[in-house]
Length: 436
Ligand SMILES: Nc1ncnc2c1ncn2[C@@H]1O[C@H](COS(=O)(=O)NC(=O)[C@@H](N)CS)[C@@H](O)[C@H]1O
Image (cartoon, rainbow, N blue to C red; front, side, top):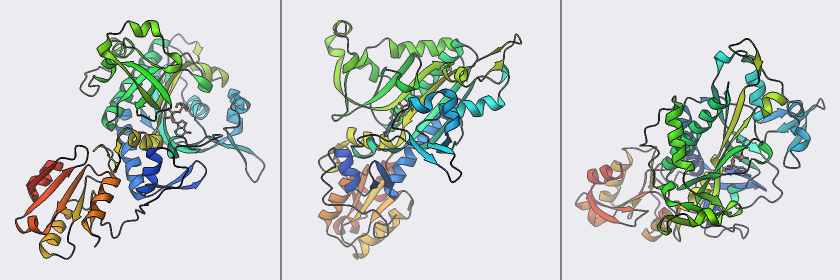
Protein backbone atom coordinates (compact mmCIF):
# COMPACT_ATOMS: atom_id res chain seq x y z
CA UNK A 1 0.00 0.00 0.00
CA UNK A 2 1.34 3.49 -0.86
CA UNK A 3 0.88 5.79 2.09
CA UNK A 4 -0.16 8.66 -0.20
CA UNK A 5 -3.12 6.47 -1.23
CA UNK A 6 -3.89 4.84 2.14
CA UNK A 7 -6.79 5.78 4.41
CA UNK A 8 -4.79 5.79 7.64
CA UNK A 9 -5.68 9.05 9.43
CA UNK A 10 -2.95 9.38 12.08
CA UNK A 11 -3.48 11.88 14.89
CA UNK A 12 -1.00 14.07 16.74
CA UNK A 13 -3.28 14.48 19.77
CA UNK A 14 -5.91 12.10 21.13
CA UNK A 15 -9.16 12.68 23.02
CA UNK A 16 -8.74 13.05 26.76
CA UNK A 17 -10.86 9.98 27.52
CA UNK A 18 -8.15 7.71 26.06
CA UNK A 19 -6.58 6.73 29.37
CA UNK A 20 -4.37 3.77 28.47
CA UNK A 21 -1.62 3.36 25.88
CA UNK A 22 -3.47 0.97 23.55
CA UNK A 23 -6.52 3.23 23.35
CA UNK A 24 -4.37 6.30 22.61
CA UNK A 25 -2.16 4.48 20.11
CA UNK A 26 -5.06 2.84 18.22
CA UNK A 27 -6.58 6.29 17.71
CA UNK A 28 -3.27 8.02 16.90
CA UNK A 29 -2.17 5.31 14.44
CA UNK A 30 -5.53 5.48 12.65
CA UNK A 31 -6.55 1.87 13.41
CA UNK A 32 -10.06 2.57 14.72
CA UNK A 33 -12.53 5.38 15.21
CA UNK A 34 -15.23 5.40 17.88
CA UNK A 35 -18.72 5.70 16.40
CA UNK A 36 -20.58 5.66 19.72
CA UNK A 37 -19.86 4.64 23.31
CA UNK A 38 -18.03 1.30 23.27
CA UNK A 39 -18.59 0.85 19.53
CA UNK A 40 -15.80 1.24 16.95
CA UNK A 41 -15.24 1.39 13.21
CA UNK A 42 -12.16 -0.57 12.13
CA UNK A 43 -10.06 1.35 9.60
CA UNK A 44 -7.90 -0.47 7.02
CA UNK A 45 -4.69 -1.03 9.05
CA UNK A 46 -6.63 -1.95 12.19
CA UNK A 47 -8.81 -4.35 10.23
CA UNK A 48 -5.71 -6.07 8.80
CA UNK A 49 -4.52 -6.76 12.35
CA UNK A 50 -7.96 -8.04 13.35
CA UNK A 51 -8.02 -10.37 10.34
CA UNK A 52 -4.48 -11.63 11.11
CA UNK A 53 -5.57 -12.52 14.65
CA UNK A 54 -8.75 -14.17 13.38
CA UNK A 55 -6.76 -16.30 10.94
CA UNK A 56 -4.37 -17.61 13.62
CA UNK A 57 -7.37 -18.43 15.84
CA UNK A 58 -9.11 -20.17 12.92
CA UNK A 59 -6.04 -22.29 12.01
CA UNK A 60 -5.46 -23.50 15.57
CA UNK A 61 -9.16 -24.26 16.14
CA UNK A 62 -9.32 -26.20 12.86
CA UNK A 63 -6.12 -28.02 13.88
CA UNK A 64 -7.89 -29.66 16.85
CA UNK A 65 -10.86 -30.69 14.69
CA UNK A 66 -13.27 -27.86 15.48
CA UNK A 67 -15.53 -26.87 12.58
CA UNK A 68 -16.28 -23.24 11.72
CA UNK A 69 -19.87 -22.06 11.39
CA UNK A 70 -21.32 -18.53 11.33
CA UNK A 71 -24.33 -17.82 13.54
CA UNK A 72 -26.29 -14.54 13.27
CA UNK A 73 -25.83 -11.64 15.67
CA UNK A 74 -29.61 -11.33 16.17
CA UNK A 75 -31.27 -14.03 18.27
CA UNK A 76 -34.83 -14.86 19.21
CA UNK A 77 -35.75 -14.12 22.83
CA UNK A 78 -37.73 -17.40 22.86
CA UNK A 79 -34.45 -19.30 22.60
CA UNK A 80 -33.23 -17.64 25.81
CA UNK A 81 -36.56 -18.14 27.52
CA UNK A 82 -36.11 -21.90 26.97
CA UNK A 83 -32.78 -21.86 28.82
CA UNK A 84 -34.08 -19.51 31.50
CA UNK A 85 -31.34 -16.94 30.83
CA UNK A 86 -33.52 -14.28 29.15
CA UNK A 87 -34.41 -12.57 32.39
CA UNK A 88 -31.35 -13.76 34.32
CA UNK A 89 -28.86 -12.14 31.92
CA UNK A 90 -29.54 -8.61 33.13
CA UNK A 91 -29.13 -5.11 31.64
CA UNK A 92 -26.08 -6.09 29.53
CA UNK A 93 -28.50 -7.75 27.09
CA UNK A 94 -29.60 -5.48 24.22
CA UNK A 95 -33.27 -6.31 23.64
CA UNK A 96 -34.89 -5.44 20.33
CA UNK A 97 -38.43 -5.58 18.91
CA UNK A 98 -39.01 -6.18 15.21
CA UNK A 99 -41.88 -4.67 13.17
CA UNK A 100 -44.15 -7.56 14.13
CA UNK A 101 -43.48 -6.93 17.82
CA UNK A 102 -41.39 -10.11 18.15
CA UNK A 103 -38.72 -10.02 20.90
CA UNK A 104 -35.20 -10.31 19.57
CA UNK A 105 -31.81 -9.64 21.14
CA UNK A 106 -28.31 -8.86 19.92
CA UNK A 107 -26.35 -11.96 21.00
CA UNK A 108 -23.89 -11.53 23.92
CA UNK A 109 -22.93 -15.22 23.48
CA UNK A 110 -24.34 -18.26 21.66
CA UNK A 111 -24.76 -21.25 24.00
CA UNK A 112 -28.54 -21.40 23.46
CA UNK A 113 -28.35 -20.94 19.70
CA UNK A 114 -25.66 -23.53 19.05
CA UNK A 115 -27.39 -26.04 21.35
CA UNK A 116 -30.65 -25.52 19.44
CA UNK A 117 -28.96 -25.92 16.04
CA UNK A 118 -27.04 -29.01 17.21
CA UNK A 119 -30.08 -30.55 18.93
CA UNK A 120 -32.30 -30.16 15.87
CA UNK A 121 -30.10 -32.43 13.78
CA UNK A 122 -27.99 -34.69 16.03
CA UNK A 123 -29.93 -37.71 17.37
CA UNK A 124 -27.31 -40.38 17.93
CA UNK A 125 -24.22 -40.77 20.11
CA UNK A 126 -22.49 -41.82 16.88
CA UNK A 127 -22.56 -38.16 15.81
CA UNK A 128 -20.47 -37.17 18.86
CA UNK A 129 -18.04 -35.59 19.59
CA UNK A 130 -18.56 -32.30 17.80
CA UNK A 131 -16.78 -28.98 18.31
CA UNK A 132 -18.27 -26.00 16.47
CA UNK A 133 -17.00 -22.42 16.52
CA UNK A 134 -17.63 -19.05 14.93
CA UNK A 135 -15.99 -15.64 14.91
CA UNK A 136 -18.84 -13.18 15.32
CA UNK A 137 -19.64 -9.77 16.76
CA UNK A 138 -21.28 -9.71 20.19
CA UNK A 139 -23.08 -6.96 22.09
CA UNK A 140 -22.97 -6.47 25.83
CA UNK A 141 -24.38 -3.19 27.13
CA UNK A 142 -21.46 -2.56 29.52
CA UNK A 143 -22.43 0.10 32.01
CA UNK A 144 -19.01 1.77 31.63
CA UNK A 145 -17.29 0.90 28.36
CA UNK A 146 -13.64 2.01 28.65
CA UNK A 147 -10.09 1.44 27.46
CA UNK A 148 -11.14 1.58 23.82
CA UNK A 149 -11.74 -1.83 22.23
CA UNK A 150 -10.59 -3.60 25.39
CA UNK A 151 -13.96 -3.18 27.09
CA UNK A 152 -16.32 -2.35 24.25
CA UNK A 153 -20.05 -2.87 23.87
CA UNK A 154 -19.87 -4.36 20.38
CA UNK A 155 -16.85 -6.67 20.18
CA UNK A 156 -15.54 -9.57 18.11
CA UNK A 157 -15.37 -12.95 19.83
CA UNK A 158 -14.38 -16.44 18.74
CA UNK A 159 -16.75 -18.68 20.62
CA UNK A 160 -16.57 -22.46 20.35
CA UNK A 161 -18.92 -25.07 21.74
CA UNK A 162 -18.22 -28.78 22.33
CA UNK A 163 -20.71 -31.67 22.49
CA UNK A 164 -19.67 -35.04 23.96
CA UNK A 165 -21.28 -38.33 25.03
CA UNK A 166 -19.52 -38.69 28.40
CA UNK A 167 -17.86 -36.58 31.09
CA UNK A 168 -14.46 -38.08 30.18
CA UNK A 169 -14.93 -37.11 26.55
CA UNK A 170 -16.03 -33.60 27.57
CA UNK A 171 -12.89 -33.21 29.71
CA UNK A 172 -10.81 -34.32 26.70
CA UNK A 173 -12.53 -31.61 24.60
CA UNK A 174 -11.78 -29.05 27.31
CA UNK A 175 -8.10 -30.05 27.34
CA UNK A 176 -7.90 -29.98 23.52
CA UNK A 177 -9.20 -26.39 23.63
CA UNK A 178 -6.71 -25.49 26.38
CA UNK A 179 -3.88 -26.68 24.10
CA UNK A 180 -5.32 -24.81 21.10
CA UNK A 181 -5.54 -21.60 23.16
CA UNK A 182 -1.95 -21.83 24.38
CA UNK A 183 -0.80 -22.36 20.79
CA UNK A 184 -2.88 -19.40 19.58
CA UNK A 185 -1.42 -17.01 22.16
CA UNK A 186 2.11 -18.25 21.48
CA UNK A 187 1.61 -17.57 17.75
CA UNK A 188 0.19 -14.12 18.53
CA UNK A 189 3.49 -13.30 20.27
CA UNK A 190 1.99 -12.59 23.69
CA UNK A 191 2.69 -14.10 27.12
CA UNK A 192 -0.65 -15.58 28.18
CA UNK A 193 -0.99 -17.27 31.57
CA UNK A 194 -3.78 -19.88 32.00
CA UNK A 195 -5.41 -19.97 35.42
CA UNK A 196 -8.41 -21.38 37.24
CA UNK A 197 -11.37 -19.00 36.88
CA UNK A 198 -14.93 -18.37 38.05
CA UNK A 199 -17.75 -19.56 35.81
CA UNK A 200 -20.10 -16.57 36.14
CA UNK A 201 -23.30 -16.36 34.04
CA UNK A 202 -22.11 -19.10 31.67
CA UNK A 203 -22.23 -21.68 34.50
CA UNK A 204 -20.49 -25.01 35.05
CA UNK A 205 -17.76 -26.11 37.47
CA UNK A 206 -14.53 -26.20 35.46
CA UNK A 207 -13.18 -23.01 33.99
CA UNK A 208 -9.85 -21.37 33.08
CA UNK A 209 -9.10 -17.89 31.88
CA UNK A 210 -6.08 -16.70 29.93
CA UNK A 211 -4.44 -13.45 30.92
CA UNK A 212 -1.98 -11.54 28.76
CA UNK A 213 0.70 -9.91 30.89
CA UNK A 214 0.65 -6.14 30.54
CA UNK A 215 1.32 -3.33 33.04
CA UNK A 216 -2.22 -1.96 32.70
CA UNK A 217 -3.99 -5.32 33.09
CA UNK A 218 -7.16 -5.16 35.18
CA UNK A 219 -6.19 -8.17 37.30
CA UNK A 220 -3.20 -8.77 39.51
CA UNK A 221 -1.51 -12.07 38.58
CA UNK A 222 0.75 -14.45 40.54
CA UNK A 223 2.18 -17.40 38.62
CA UNK A 224 4.98 -19.96 38.34
CA UNK A 225 7.49 -19.04 35.62
CA UNK A 226 7.37 -22.67 34.42
CA UNK A 227 3.99 -21.83 32.86
CA UNK A 228 5.44 -19.47 30.28
CA UNK A 229 8.68 -21.29 29.53
CA UNK A 230 6.81 -23.95 27.53
CA UNK A 231 6.86 -24.27 23.75
CA UNK A 232 3.21 -25.29 23.26
CA UNK A 233 3.58 -25.30 19.47
CA UNK A 234 6.56 -27.66 19.54
CA UNK A 235 5.00 -29.96 22.09
CA UNK A 236 3.69 -33.22 20.55
CA UNK A 237 0.21 -33.96 21.93
CA UNK A 238 -1.99 -36.69 20.47
CA UNK A 239 -5.34 -34.88 20.57
CA UNK A 240 -7.22 -38.14 20.07
CA UNK A 241 -5.59 -39.82 23.05
CA UNK A 242 -6.99 -39.03 26.51
CA UNK A 243 -3.72 -40.01 28.20
CA UNK A 244 -1.67 -37.66 26.00
CA UNK A 245 -4.15 -34.84 26.71
CA UNK A 246 -4.04 -35.60 30.45
CA UNK A 247 -0.24 -35.42 30.49
CA UNK A 248 -0.32 -32.10 28.64
CA UNK A 249 -3.03 -30.72 30.94
CA UNK A 250 -1.06 -31.61 34.08
CA UNK A 251 1.81 -29.48 32.73
CA UNK A 252 -0.57 -26.55 33.05
CA UNK A 253 -2.43 -27.39 36.26
CA UNK A 254 0.66 -28.57 38.17
CA UNK A 255 1.97 -25.00 38.18
CA UNK A 256 0.58 -22.22 40.34
CA UNK A 257 -1.29 -19.34 38.72
CA UNK A 258 -3.96 -17.12 40.26
CA UNK A 259 -5.43 -13.65 40.04
CA UNK A 260 -5.25 -11.51 43.17
CA UNK A 261 -8.83 -12.52 44.08
CA UNK A 262 -7.90 -16.20 44.26
CA UNK A 263 -4.26 -15.90 45.37
CA UNK A 264 -3.34 -18.47 48.06
CA UNK A 265 -0.30 -17.39 50.08
CA UNK A 266 0.27 -20.90 51.48
CA UNK A 267 0.47 -22.42 48.00
CA UNK A 268 2.57 -19.47 46.78
CA UNK A 269 5.09 -20.05 49.56
CA UNK A 270 5.82 -23.55 48.20
CA UNK A 271 7.23 -22.17 44.95
CA UNK A 272 11.01 -21.54 44.74
CA UNK A 273 11.70 -17.81 44.79
CA UNK A 274 13.37 -17.80 41.37
CA UNK A 275 10.21 -19.20 39.76
CA UNK A 276 7.79 -16.68 41.30
CA UNK A 277 6.34 -14.14 38.86
CA UNK A 278 3.91 -11.31 39.55
CA UNK A 279 2.28 -8.91 37.15
CA UNK A 280 -0.92 -7.54 35.80
CA UNK A 281 -3.09 -9.38 33.28
CA UNK A 282 -5.72 -8.70 30.65
CA UNK A 283 -8.27 -11.48 30.17
CA UNK A 284 -8.16 -12.49 26.50
CA UNK A 285 -9.79 -15.90 26.69
CA UNK A 286 -12.07 -17.88 28.97
CA UNK A 287 -13.08 -21.55 28.69
CA UNK A 288 -15.84 -23.42 30.53
CA UNK A 289 -17.01 -26.97 31.06
CA UNK A 290 -20.66 -26.92 32.10
CA UNK A 291 -21.92 -30.46 31.46
CA UNK A 292 -25.62 -30.69 30.63
CA UNK A 293 -26.64 -27.19 31.78
CA UNK A 294 -28.01 -26.22 28.35
CA UNK A 295 -28.89 -29.63 26.91
CA UNK A 296 -31.07 -30.26 29.99
CA UNK A 297 -32.67 -26.82 30.21
CA UNK A 298 -33.38 -26.89 26.46
CA UNK A 299 -34.31 -30.60 26.50
CA UNK A 300 -31.77 -31.77 23.91
CA UNK A 301 -31.17 -35.53 23.95
CA UNK A 302 -29.40 -38.13 21.77
CA UNK A 303 -29.83 -41.91 21.72
CA UNK A 304 -26.98 -43.85 23.38
CA UNK A 305 -25.41 -47.14 22.33
CA UNK A 306 -27.77 -48.88 24.80
CA UNK A 307 -30.84 -47.34 23.14
CA UNK A 308 -31.46 -45.03 26.08
CA UNK A 309 -31.43 -41.27 25.44
CA UNK A 310 -29.15 -38.88 27.33
CA UNK A 311 -28.22 -35.17 27.45
CA UNK A 312 -24.85 -34.53 25.75
CA UNK A 313 -22.07 -32.91 27.80
CA UNK A 314 -20.97 -29.41 26.71
CA UNK A 315 -18.34 -26.76 27.11
CA UNK A 316 -17.88 -23.27 25.65
CA UNK A 317 -14.63 -21.51 24.82
CA UNK A 318 -14.26 -17.79 24.11
CA UNK A 319 -11.43 -15.58 22.85
CA UNK A 320 -11.70 -11.80 22.68
CA UNK A 321 -10.47 -11.24 19.11
CA UNK A 322 -11.01 -7.47 19.05
CA UNK A 323 -9.82 -7.13 22.67
CA UNK A 324 -6.59 -8.86 21.62
CA UNK A 325 -5.71 -5.95 19.29
CA UNK A 326 -5.64 -3.68 22.35
CA UNK A 327 -4.08 -6.30 24.64
CA UNK A 328 -1.21 -6.95 22.22
CA UNK A 329 -0.47 -3.22 22.09
CA UNK A 330 -0.60 -2.98 25.90
CA UNK A 331 1.93 -5.80 26.05
CA UNK A 332 4.08 -4.50 23.18
CA UNK A 333 4.62 -0.75 22.78
CA UNK A 334 7.05 1.98 23.81
CA UNK A 335 6.94 5.77 24.03
CA UNK A 336 7.32 6.04 20.23
CA UNK A 337 4.31 3.83 19.51
CA UNK A 338 3.13 0.31 18.74
CA UNK A 339 5.55 -2.64 18.37
CA UNK A 340 3.62 -5.27 16.40
CA UNK A 341 4.59 -8.93 16.72
CA UNK A 342 5.38 -10.07 13.16
CA UNK A 343 2.47 -12.52 13.13
CA UNK A 344 -0.23 -9.84 13.49
CA UNK A 345 1.39 -6.70 12.00
CA UNK A 346 -0.70 -4.94 9.33
CA UNK A 347 2.36 -4.86 7.05
CA UNK A 348 5.65 -6.81 7.02
CA UNK A 349 7.69 -3.60 6.74
CA UNK A 350 7.52 0.11 5.95
CA UNK A 351 9.65 1.44 3.08
CA UNK A 352 10.81 4.96 3.97
CA UNK A 353 11.96 7.02 1.00
CA UNK A 354 14.08 9.81 2.52
CA UNK A 355 14.18 11.81 -0.69
CA UNK A 356 11.07 11.43 -2.81
CA UNK A 357 11.92 12.47 -6.36
CA UNK A 358 15.59 11.41 -6.15
CA UNK A 359 16.03 8.98 -9.07
CA UNK A 360 18.12 6.37 -7.20
CA UNK A 361 15.88 6.46 -4.09
CA UNK A 362 12.65 6.20 -6.06
CA UNK A 363 14.03 3.35 -8.19
CA UNK A 364 15.13 1.28 -5.18
CA UNK A 365 11.89 1.94 -3.28
CA UNK A 366 9.75 0.98 -6.26
CA UNK A 367 11.73 -2.24 -6.81
CA UNK A 368 11.37 -3.25 -3.14
CA UNK A 369 7.70 -2.25 -3.05
CA UNK A 370 7.05 -4.22 -6.24
CA UNK A 371 8.08 -7.47 -4.51
CA UNK A 372 4.98 -7.44 -2.26
CA UNK A 373 2.78 -4.32 -2.65
CA UNK A 374 -0.06 -5.95 -0.71
CA UNK A 375 1.99 -6.46 2.46
CA UNK A 376 4.53 -3.62 2.37
CA UNK A 377 3.66 -0.04 3.34
CA UNK A 378 5.55 2.44 1.10
CA UNK A 379 5.83 5.89 2.69
CA UNK A 380 6.02 7.79 -0.58
CA UNK A 381 4.99 11.15 0.94
CA UNK A 382 7.14 14.18 0.29
CA UNK A 383 7.43 14.80 4.05
CA UNK A 384 10.88 15.11 5.60
CA UNK A 385 12.66 12.09 7.13
CA UNK A 386 11.78 12.86 10.75
CA UNK A 387 8.05 12.74 10.04
CA UNK A 388 8.47 9.39 8.28
CA UNK A 389 10.53 7.92 11.13
CA UNK A 390 8.03 9.07 13.76
CA UNK A 391 5.01 7.74 11.85
CA UNK A 392 6.71 4.40 11.16
CA UNK A 393 7.56 4.03 14.87
CA UNK A 394 3.99 5.00 15.80
CA UNK A 395 2.40 2.51 13.38
CA UNK A 396 4.64 -0.22 14.76
CA UNK A 397 5.85 -2.05 11.64
CA UNK A 398 8.28 -4.84 12.62
CA UNK A 399 10.84 -3.51 10.10
CA UNK A 400 11.66 -0.16 8.49
CA UNK A 401 13.50 -0.25 5.14
CA UNK A 402 15.15 3.19 5.02
CA UNK A 403 16.27 4.37 1.59
CA UNK A 404 18.52 7.46 1.52
CA UNK A 405 20.28 9.05 -1.50
CA UNK A 406 23.85 8.04 -0.42
CA UNK A 407 23.03 4.39 0.16
CA UNK A 408 20.79 4.20 -2.89
CA UNK A 409 23.70 5.07 -5.20
CA UNK A 410 25.52 1.94 -3.91
CA UNK A 411 22.34 -0.20 -3.97
CA UNK A 412 22.32 -0.21 -0.15
CA UNK A 413 19.46 0.33 2.28
CA UNK A 414 19.34 0.72 6.05
CA UNK A 415 17.16 -1.81 7.84
CA UNK A 416 15.79 -0.98 11.31
CA UNK A 417 14.20 -3.63 13.52
CA UNK A 418 11.42 -1.91 15.51
CA UNK A 419 11.44 -4.23 18.54
CA UNK A 420 15.21 -4.00 19.20
CA UNK A 421 16.00 -0.70 17.48
CA UNK A 422 18.92 -2.50 15.78
CA UNK A 423 20.05 -1.13 12.40
CA UNK A 424 21.74 -2.96 9.52
CA UNK A 425 23.35 -1.62 6.30
CA UNK A 426 22.42 -4.20 3.65
CA UNK A 427 21.97 -4.76 -0.06
CA UNK A 428 18.33 -4.82 -1.18
CA UNK A 429 18.24 -8.59 -1.53
CA UNK A 430 19.86 -9.15 1.88
CA UNK A 431 17.37 -6.74 3.45
CA UNK A 432 14.43 -8.55 1.83
CA UNK A 433 15.83 -11.88 2.98
CA UNK A 434 16.22 -10.59 6.54
CA UNK A 435 12.64 -9.35 6.92
CA UNK A 436 11.43 -12.80 5.80
N1 LIG B 1 -16.88 -6.05 26.67
C1 LIG B 1 -15.94 -6.77 26.05
N2 LIG B 1 -15.13 -6.16 25.14
C2 LIG B 1 -14.16 -6.88 24.51
N3 LIG B 1 -13.92 -8.19 24.72
C3 LIG B 1 -14.71 -8.83 25.61
C4 LIG B 1 -15.75 -8.16 26.33
N4 LIG B 1 -16.36 -9.07 27.15
C5 LIG B 1 -15.71 -10.25 26.97
N5 LIG B 1 -14.73 -10.10 26.05
C6 LIG B 1 -13.80 -11.14 25.60
O1 LIG B 1 -14.54 -12.32 25.26
C7 LIG B 1 -13.96 -13.43 25.94
C8 LIG B 1 -15.05 -14.47 26.21
O2 LIG B 1 -16.10 -13.86 26.94
S1 LIG B 1 -16.65 -14.65 28.18
O3 LIG B 1 -17.80 -13.93 28.63
O4 LIG B 1 -15.59 -14.84 29.10
N6 LIG B 1 -17.08 -16.12 27.65
C9 LIG B 1 -18.15 -16.34 26.90
O5 LIG B 1 -18.85 -15.46 26.47
C10 LIG B 1 -18.45 -17.80 26.62
N7 LIG B 1 -19.70 -17.88 25.92
C11 LIG B 1 -17.34 -18.40 25.85
S2 LIG B 1 -17.86 -19.02 24.34
C12 LIG B 1 -13.35 -12.85 27.20
O6 LIG B 1 -12.30 -13.68 27.68
C13 LIG B 1 -12.82 -11.51 26.69
O7 LIG B 1 -11.51 -11.67 26.12
